[in-house]
Length: 377
Image (cartoon, rainbow, N blue to C red; front, side):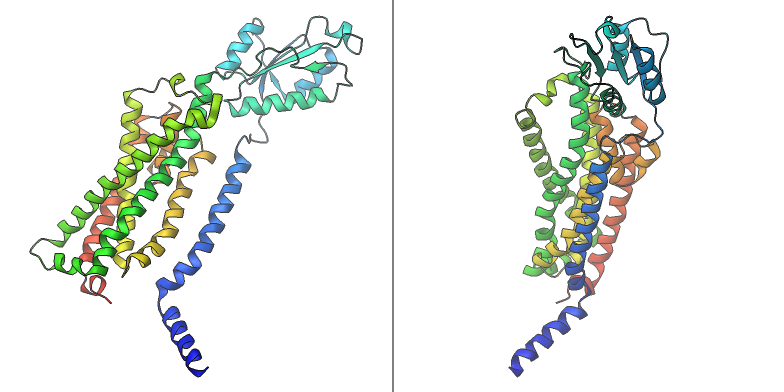
């Protein structure tokens, strides 16, 4: 039993003296807390509208009592010629909702014939969906059942196939792309640096006449290519499978993405890969083995995926926020997919990523020059 306690004491001593070991145990719990908290925030904010927002509405044929009540919660727009004009304004997002009461509503309200009130909205617009639910709940207080809502079998959701697809793509692409690129980087970074240290081939490379800064840059560029190849391959597979996965809710052919959008997206992807692979390479250089490198990179990989989710709960961020490394790239990807991206915002996102990647390459080169880091046992 004494020997057992001796071994336990030795392992405890090794664990608590190694800060990296402590971090690999504590960080996952912290990251899970952060991720789940952010996910809760994301889901709570999807479809949310500011409390003081008053939806813009067109109302036709409403009796005085209902018109007065709806006027308390809606900003009724005047000067709209007819229902068709109002529907067009709902579709393009100028107003949020169009509420149309039938001409014989007051004559049949509470009678044998049940009139139907039509509420036209645009589900691709957050405020329009909010307005629909608001109007439906207000009118619901008057039904006993004196009238129905949207029972006529018409098309009341005026969101076009294009706008719905752009909304879905702007939410999904940043999260998917960050997760796939991080996974691809995770697959190649530990083996290339920590793996070579573990096998002893890194020491051989470092004693050659080649400048260690060039070795660091060469590692980053080659790893970027492999990670980019893996990430884009996975991304293409996911995108091609989306129509079947989402059914009729998404039609990629409905969105007129052009060369400009794909060019900007590709530029963002390259810059994101450079940052991720550089960061993972630095952590891999700190590790003594592939297993240890994987433990160090794991929490950062989760952090990268979380950054990809930023665009979901900040869909209309200012251009200045695009300059935040990685997080700004998620916002830029979302804007590109919704076809609202500005060249300045995309440029800021790419430049900020390149600056961070360059700093990380310099750090990696410095680490390669450190005998203590590269040859520790």
